[in-house]
Image 1: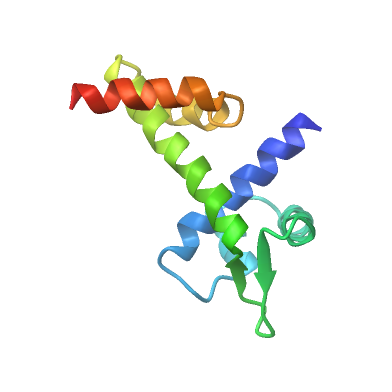
Image 2: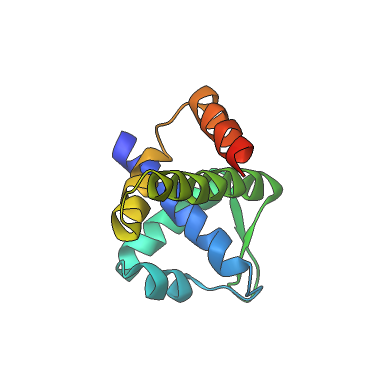
Length: 123
């Protein structure tokens, strides 16, 4: 179940990234970005709808709800900051990206806030 939760968060993050430049986002756009199958995307979209994190309009465009935006921006911020933190300590970019993607789902708010604070003080 935990893995499914992480997967849903990844879909939400990808929708956020795609929606930043496209207000006519379709499920196929998510499939193209992630490389996941259409059935997998369909299951995730239904789950996100059920959790009221997205809506789909009459033209089948996917939109984040306010709650979806809040959750997606939190995940995305964690992803970006953790990637930077890992690269700062010498992890190569590709590994940092992959590790940050896994860590972003399990790190506590307290630990994340400390890392964020420490990195901001280094700037």
